[in-house]
Image (cartoon, helix red, strand yellow):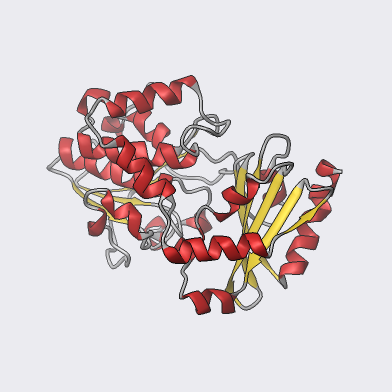
Length: 316
């Protein structure tokens, strides 16, 4: 990667930075890292961030409270899309696709094949935060930018335990730590700590889970009525599918929650052998080989039956 963000900012006065729906750690980290880098090094540019409300623990990242959850603007010189695998995954800034002069998309989803003014997609990198780091000048990365990027890398690598972690990923993380960031607090506060509601939902998901294919697949679902009982939001579901994957003998985990009656947000995780992005793509979703997602219709059993049509070939 030789290109740097500077060349895309020539003659640019206004920038919108946007992430995907239900923003996770990598999405929040890449968006806020880019925002802080522009604010620190290009004060003449008016930059704004558009994100749906993330979970509360992410607000330790400075300026996240400035992210806009409603898009009322009609024009920007440049729209920067981060961690967005497809057009239909753009959150509150979706309308800017039609009005921005130019669009730059930085991503690492292998299923991203959309068209923009510029698309730089690197599926072999651990996270969009790692992609963003490569577009920045390391000596110009300030402490607050480094905090955001480090958080995103931590989340998409599972604190450096997933197979997407490379020696280069560790070197980049080390360079961010050298900026003086509170790296232990970032990991503990945003990755490991859960709210009481999150722990209750995790417990319920594990209690009601079931195994298939001789224990190689674990499945669980949370219905809309359960979410209403716990007063839960989609952000409270973060991490459940990964914890399910930690079950001994499991190769693939499926967790789904009901967005509305008969509509399910499905997350898939794989330990080593199965490319779950292929399965997600069958139903209009996408993602990575070891982590993918899709929205599906029907009962939870309909969803499981459809997904296992393809998973059975891989797991039996």
